[in-house]
Amino acid sequence: MDLQLIAESIPQLLSGVPLTLQLVVLSLFFGAFLAVGTALMRLSPNPLMSAPAYGYVFVFRGTPLLVQIFLVYYGVAQLEIVRESFLWAFLKEPYWCAILALTLNTGAYGSEIVRGGLLSVPRGQMEAARACGMSGPTAFRRIVFPQALRQALPAYSNEIILMVKGSSLASTITLMEITGIAKRLISNTFAPIEIFIVAGSIYLAINYAATRAIAVAEWRLTPHQRPRIDPTPAPRGTGLPGPLRSRGRRARSVTSAH
Amino acid sequence: MIDLLAVGPEGWGDEMLRGAAMTVVVAVLAYGLGLVVGTGAAAAKLSGSFILRSIAGAYTTVIRGVPELLVIYLFFFGSGGAVMWVARQFGYTGYIELDAFTIGVLAVGIISGAYSTEVIRGAFQTIPAGQIEAGRAAGMSGWLIFRRITFPQMLRLALPGLGNVWQLTLKDTALISVTALAELMRMASVAAGSTREPFIFYVTAAALYLAMTTVSQTGFQWAERRAGRSLQPVKAAGA
Image 1 (cartoon, chains in turn brown, yellow):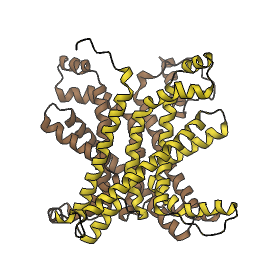
Image 2 (cartoon, rainbow over the protein chains, first blue to last red):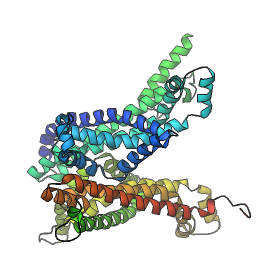
Image 3 (spheres, rainbow over the protein chains, first blue to last red):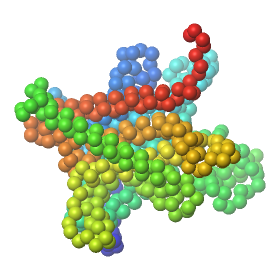
Image 4 (spheres, one colour):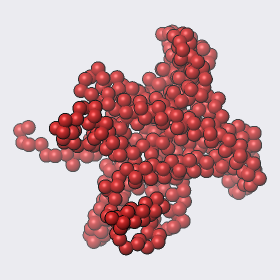
């Protein structure tokens, strides 16, 4: 184990973090819209809506992400129609090709999560909203969607991890994100283990931070599912995560003020 | 376009099919290795030993939290050195190099094993402790309980999860094309490069992957139905 090499590789590998994060955040952002749209199409009773959505999900979940990235980067660039359209300004850049492929991929996986969330909202809620005089879209926006989102959130943290890992494939189309830099360092130094330890730790840290963030968001969105707060202060080290404890204390002070 | 995919010296159809066959071979071997590793790691996670549990926990956390491509680079560049180091401990001083096939199976197998571990552990924990106690009370030994009570039920409980792991493993084999092993993805890249027709070859590769995942999904669904026969509701007489 070469500790000096590890120390030297840390700043170089960290310089790939912004690109990795950009790929992940942008793909997840665009992919979330695609996922909601696809899920709604799949739940539509009209086969002209549900069939294309089903086909899209089937193809993108059944093929490796690497094929999808290569198809977008090398394959689509070959088509005359694309080269002559305004899209070419984006699709000639490997950066946008990677984001497009990752977006399409996470949109397909995410739509299954969103669909499960939408299906978990009881029918009666929609009926009650309609009975109150809400229009369909209003009821969806106010009643169904917030609950579906809450239901889908835990599963979405897995999807974020998949995207963080999937963004490493962008290195195969010349983008120097963390894995791309790691590969270059490994072939320059012939020290695969040292570089793997540093690059792997960075990925684990990113994934850990992402899952914690989702756990906090989930906790904030489900106040009704929390156990009733005991007025006696909880003993230290009860195993609750940080935000749970601090939030619990704040909630207690609010109740005592009333 | 058709002659590009023709079988024979001009077309690339036979090369693509041979690549697909290689993909299946690598996936099956890696999946098998993953099941062996996963069973061992699941046993370690459930064992009373703190050291074993920590090792297995670190294994599944690292492998599942780090990109597959990075693991494959580690194996591709690092496995030769590791094998030579082990060989040197046994007094062998010659030069050993692992071929791309072995490295690919090892790397994808280790990745697959991390996911199998969680599935197998979950299946084991689903079995009520009372059944194991009942086995003990009936005078069965630990091994007999495993063989007669735990294992047959684990097969059924783990099947859906193991089906997912198979799909992951099959798709992960595409990544070992970076080691130039002549599997489907590599063949598609070679054909795309030499004909300058990437679109048709990557679409073909995608279609072949889709065929493999669809067929195996059907197979796993059949196996699940078969394994769950005893749990299906009894059909009314004459229905």
